[in-house]
Image (cartoon, rainbow, N blue to C red; front, top):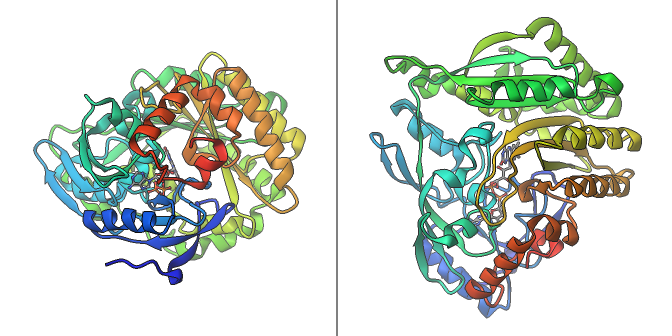
Length: 467
Ligand SMILES: Cc1cc2nc3c(=O)[nH]c(=O)nc-3n(C[C@H](O)[C@H](O)[C@H](O)COP(=O)(O)OP(=O)(O)OC[C@H]3O[C@@H](n4cnc5c(N)ncnc54)[C@H](O)[C@@H]3O)c2cc1C
């Protein structure tokens, strides 16, 4: 039996460590315990906030004064069928659980994020996309069914034939508790990709590369140097990846051991200390230098070269350096990702970079991807491109940074663009209204019907007017 206990008060933040609030933290292990927690919250006049691995950058997994249900301990694989590739898990299982379960049988998660840490609950709350979004759509496209507990404690199984399926997935933890998920994995015959690297000199070349490879590549992603100016604006490094096919299963490359990321860099430096070396460089001058060095090294040494890379190494680059976010302390950082239709993406991204340079607040990391549209209710998708930008936050730059983001929002919205709630820290209510349009009213009507007391809340939902 759970009790309401002040000792459970915990300061919770998102991955960027810029926004935090206190909540009563509970980590249930069963459906019954979740139901009990919903009742407890009601008795105590508290709201409920749902939380996974807290890999959303801003305040999406936080809930000030709420009873927070952290789903991470409900992480069992309930059923794995190596013939069909269907996997059913409790929703606290992670992307890592998926690949570790499937790979030795020749299956890989259909969609992965840049880190393997997200839970399936959080990944579907936000409906994550991967570097194959232009081809495979978001994770929700590969879910065959999910079990949800509504605010009144009832459990319902949703399938794609039910419109609620498209609202709960992408619903930012505001409609019900995702309990269990069944996903169709992707068949692979080896654990490797063939990866091509090309170093575009400017925006024109960036977009030409995406257009050239979108017809046949399995994955595409490009890093953008946000310090590049004038005719070098948009320079970076583009990667396209293709599953390495083999007539027979290549068991060696499918072994978990051959996928696991190494513990040290070049066998010398333990990865756990690497962020300490990054910290002194994590400022405007250091990052200008590192971005330029990366571009030039790529252009001279690796341009138009193809290498074989394991799926884990290609997919989870950001997991290579544990705790790398600590290099952004004490102020933390935000990620700003906008999605712009293909007709205007080049213009908008170039203007965003120019604005950052005018503000002298260049993003230390810029990452571009190609996307296609999907039909989820709170979707961020467009037939176009996204640019994700990491900004260091300090007490000195915070207000200017928010003003920069709002200017970039106006630009994105005036070209029919959208935003992604997992990466949001600075959206305003009017931004959400403008890009979601009638979908926002539809969402609010569903919220009223499914959760009339508005039990489920997050700090983000309060800030941007989702509830
Ligand atoms: C290094 C890094 C790289 C990333 N790369 C990508 C990427 O390539 N593509 C991409 O799309 N995203 C990416 N992300 C973002 C990340 O995938 C999403 O934020 C994802 O939602 C995180 O899952 P989580 O388990 O941490 O959920 P949280 O961040 O804890 O929660 C996310 C949302 O899900 C809701 N939620 C939690 N549990 C439940 C539940 N049981 N039922 C219903 N709703 C629930 C929460 O209320 C919240 O609104 C990246 C993040 C990091 C840190």
